[in-house]
Image (tube, rainbow, N blue to C red; front, side):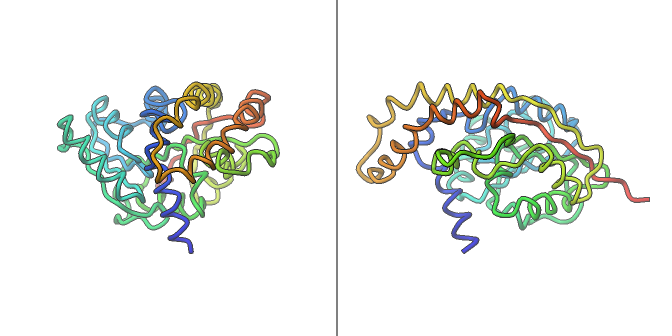
Length: 262
C-alpha cells in the first residue's frame, strides 16, 4: 500500500495539466528561492549535493550552473527522471548533474555520501517525513547540511482544503514550524535555523488563479475524470488564498547540520 501511495503521488505531478497550472516552477518561489535555500545550506563549489524529490531537475541544474558543484537528483517518478536527464543533456550539464529513480525513505546511497542534501516542497507529502529526514541524515557526512523548503501550517486546516487542492499546494500534509524543528531535532540535527518566506506561497496561488481559466482548453479525453476533480477543487482556490493571506499557512526554509562526532 505504501508503494502504491508513493507511485500515485509521484505520477500525479507528471500530468500535463499540472504543467499548465504551475509552469516550470512546481514549488513556491521557483529558482530564486532555490538559490536562497542553497545559500542557507552553504552550498559550495566542492560540495556533492543530493536533491531529494528533484522532479524534472530544474533546481539541480540551477545549482550546478551557479555553484559548479556536483549534484545527484532522486525522484520516485520514472517519468520525471527521464525528462530530467533529457533536459540536462540538452543544456550540457551531464558532467555535473545526474538523476536516478528512487525512494526518499530508502535512499540508495552509502552512508556519508554527500556534503549537502536539499528537499523542496516535498517533505509534507512524504508518507513518513521522520523516516525521510533520517535517511537524509544517514547519507550526509559529519558536518554536512540539510536544507528543506516547505509549507508551514500555522492554524488548523479547514475542511475545504482537505482535498486535491490541499495536496497540490502541499498544505494538507504540512507541519507547523515547531513540527519541522521537532523532526530535525529528533533525527539528530543541530544548528537548526528557520527563515520565513511566506510571500512565495501567496504568489504561487495568484499564479494558479490566473491559469485556471485556460486549463480546460488543453485537456484531452483521457483526463476528463481528472478535469472534473480539478474543477471541483480549484473552485475553492479562493478559500486557499484567504487561508494563506490570513496567516493560516506560510512557507519556510529550514536548515540543520549533522553533528561531527567526538
